[in-house]
Length: 330
Image (tube, rainbow, N blue to C red; front, side):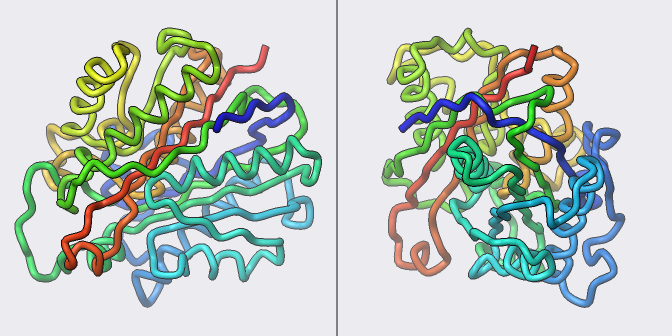
């Protein structure tokens, strides 16, 4: 399902990152960073709440807005019961929608927020996501304290908070359309190979978006997925060509862009997590759209919908991707 919008704009963004992300190629573009993983908090879970709250504060300040100017807060993360988002919401006194589609959460939030604004129910909406490497690793995979080795296909959950404020007032960048993904099952079962799990979902959503909009891939200056990593990126290109006859020439992956893969060996196949693609989009891509270096970008966030329980039960890992079309405003 693809929805077109006429009056949904990006007011401001806030991007706050941890130490690994700040050592990557986009470090100069982030609004704020921390040099340790606790951010002055007692627990890692509290640290994730703090980094989301920080990103909200940054976005509000950049947009010259107060919380009483905001009609709705939409947020999601990787913690059980999306508690990072819930605790951040408890400090805002704003109506709250908690959402979850794993690493595809940010595009889900943008699509929901855009629909509320286009329908004139809301004037200003905050959309936030967060993830924390240490929190996510001990929840979804082996505790990092065990020192268990990981294969080269594994990705590295990004640490950060990212916020976007959507508005009905004209700005330099708008959300032009959104395509909500369909869950797909390609019988993948390896939680250490998210690229293989999520590439088919990205392909399905890109193909449907292009068909719904009557466009080709070359109608976009850039198509970005998040987060397939180095292996998933190549799988997607092959899948698009063989399955749909579409060649992706103007394409990259946010998980590949966030880190220096040559020198930051710990990140393996690249970044992942709900915040990973948002960090790239809000720090780098939005600025390029504002400066008209890019005119139209298709942002396709991908998510693997599994839990430790389903993995232990050897169930297939379901994946999904949602797409957001961003345009520079003349």
